[in-house]
Every structure is written in C-alpha cells, then in structure tokens.
Amino acid sequence: MTTAALPAPSEARTYEVRTYGCQMNVHDSERISGLLEAAGYVRAPQDADPDVVVFNTCAVRENADNRLYGNLGHLRPVKDSHPGMQIAVGGCLAQKDRGDIVAKAPWVDVVFGTHNIGSLPALLERARHNADAEVEILESLEVFPSTLPTRRESTYAGWVSISVGCNNTCTFCIVPSLRGKEKDRRPGDVLSEVRALVAEGVLEVTLLGQNVNSYGVEFGDRYAFGKLLRATGEIEGLERVRFTSPHPKDFTDDVIAAMAETPNVCHSLHMPLQSGSDAMLKSMRRSYRQERYLGIIEKVRAAMPDAAITTDIIVGFPGETEADFQATLDVVREARFSSAFTFQYSKRPGTPAATMDSQVPKEVVKERYGRLMEVVEEITWAENRAQVGREVELLVAVGEGRKDERTGRMSGRARDGRLVHFDTGDLGAAIRPGDIVHTEITYAAPHHLNADGAPISHRTTRAGDAWAAGRSPRTPGVNLGLPTIGVPAPLPVAVSACQTH
Image (cartoon, rainbow, N blue to C red; front, top):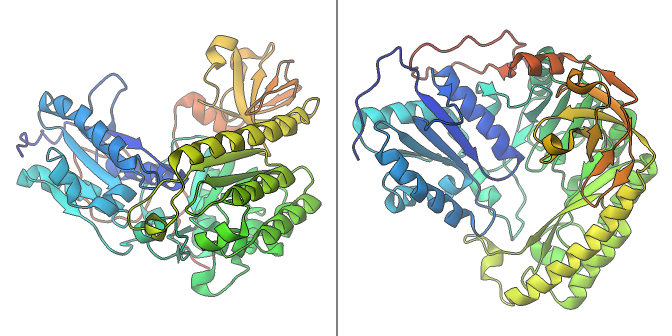
C-alpha cells in the first residue's frame, strides 16, 4: 500500500463518517467525529472528497457484509485519484471480520473494533507513517466510550450511554460477542454528562444501552435504572428524557412508576417483542413469555394511558410454524403498538440460530412478513387517527420531513415520539429546529401525523439559538495523549463527566 507524504502541520485533513446500524452506532460515530476533531481534523464539505473516510459498521443483518464491501469497492477509484486519502473501518462488522477486511479490500488503511474507538487517530497516523494497514481489535473495553470527546450531531437532542455490552444470550443476536459483557457507568458520571449537554442548550436526552433497564447489574442495584430516571427529573432545563432499548425480562414496576411520576420522562416506550409465541421465545432464549410481555404493556397503559409503545418483531425464526406466527399477530393486535420495527429472520454466522434445524423457507418468511405488515399498519393507522384533534407539544426537528421543503411544512416529534409535519402559519422562519411548538393534529397517516392549522404557540429555546448560530454541542473527554494534526479547535467549557457519586 502506498501512502502520500504527510501534509504540513498547518494543513487540516478532512474527514467523513458513514454510519450503519443502531442508535449505539450513531452515538459511537459522534465520538469518532469528536476524536478526529480533537486531533485536528475538520469535517469535509459535502461536495468534496474527504482525506479520511470512516465506516462505522453494523453486523446485525445478513446484507451488512455485502453493503460494506460494495461501498469499499465504490470508494477505491476515489482513493486512487486522491493521493493521501485513508479509509478506516470500525464497528461491529470490523470486530467480527478483523483482518479479513484488509484481505478482501487491501486499499483499507485502518481496521478498529468496538472496544478501541479511542485508538483511531493514532492508528490513522501510524498507517500513514508506516505506509501499511493497521488492524487493532481488542477483546475487552479499553476505556468507557463516554470518556472520549464527542461532536454531537444535534443542537437539541443528545444520546447518553449508561452502559455498553450485553449479558443476554439471545440465539439470533451477534451483538454480545461483538460488544462484550455489560459494563455500567456510575450514576454520577451519567448525570454529569446530561448536565453538560443541558448547559449547551440540549433539551432532550436519550439514555442508551444494549439492555438499558438491566443497568446497575455491575454494581449490584437492580433498581438503579428507575432511580436514574427519577434523578434526571431534578436536572433544571432538561425537558425530555427517553431511553432505549429495554428488555422485558428486566422491566420492573419501579421503572413504570418512575416514568409516570417524573415530569420530563416521556410517555414513550420501545419494548422489543421479537415473537408472540412462547415456543419461539424459548428457542430465542428471550427469558419471558407472552403473558409476561402483555402484563407489562397492561401496567404501562394503566399508569400512562397516553403512552405510545413501539416494538421489534422477527418473522421466520427457525422452527416458526403458522401457529407461532398467529400468536405474534395476536400479541400485535392486543398490544396495539404505535409503530413496529419488523424484520425477516436472517442467519448470522456465529449465532446458535444459524445452525438450528427447521430453517423456514424464504418464500414462507416473505409471505408471513407481508401479512404482519398489513396488521401492523392497520393498527398504527388506527392509533394515529385517534390523535386527530389533539393538541401536541413538538420539539422541532431537522431532517425528519423529506417533503417539508416542497410542502412548506416543518417537522417535529411529540412527547410520545410520534412524527408530526406541521404548518408554520405566519411564523415562518421564526421557528427553528430546537424550538418548541404547540399545534393541533388535523390528519393521520400510518407512519406520521399532520397539523395543517397555524401553531397555537411557539417558544424559542437555547437549542434553537444554537442551531441558528451553527453551533454543535461538544462534550470533552479524558485526554488520551492522542496525536494531533494541525491545531485543534478549542472545545467549549462544559461540566466534567468524570465526577462519581
């Protein structure tokens, strides 16, 4: 592999991060951006080829490999025509494939895993110096990712990791082998990071974990997550708190009470079902059954009648019969989800399910998936129609409405998480992403709502001010002694995230 000469120290190299997968990956990409900018890189303009392209990959779906190698192939001629360009691959697929990535795509410069994101700037520099690929995959966490500098993508909403890794053994899931065992942050660290975000104008945080409500297992407090939710209610200026994703086996009544009694915790819940069949749940090693799952939904609705509940469902898991599939449809009809993320089962090498007998034929999976989608859409549309005529509070968003420019609307998320496209009336440009709008729902579609009347009220916020000024929240991390290129931009002053209670 050939590498161009190093640029002069005054030259800032540009970067681009391409993200695939879940919210954890999205937040990891914010850390990758923060690391690179702390090391002196700058984000590449949209119309320019970057000096460094980082792929932050996912390994959950069957086509993840094809997608990565296809994109790497498209990038090869770009790199050939751009002397000094580097390509890095990180994330779950990098943790899984390791050195195979460089063997299949020798024009890749750096491969790093899920446990050593903080090494990326050093690996890039080493690859340039040695004119050879650098592959570094650790088997356990090097530092908790939230101690790394982070360049936030949103001025109004932020991700906050409370744990990484997972102790579950679901037979369809490859994540535990790639993310490792669960590691929990101390509550004081989490709350300090939330306060730092609020100090920069952020109004909404989402608490993240592979199994968010098992938080506390590492320090022996099974009620830690409910306590953490309540503690966020004491943070002045924080208007909305969300969390994802919980696991039904760990979902305790104190969490429901904390959601219902803490004013800034939103009445929205993502509760993965996967299957409504007890036989399939046992085969999946999901540690709960249909009765337990529906019991949680019933308790949530009793405490919060306005709660919007979303879910994940897998169709065609090995051994699934028509009766098993019908059990899933029964739960969907009873639970009445506001939306569902639905998947056709796909084999993932390295998971127990990949070698199970009775793999369901693809044509059967596809047919069942179509029937599931019909039922899901029927219910989500009915649930959305029930919102017509209601006044909602919207946190104005950016990039949520693909047709907003053409229709003259803006978009935002209601407190229950529903997407609303709204008319701005006479307020027009006065409304910014990050502001708060109250409006009335006038129309419902299966996957969104419209509010076509003039807003009832509009409140400007510091998040909206930050968006108008083009400022992105940045949270500093622990100085890891990483190499720098050029002169790093100074980070804004924020509350330290290293305090513990």
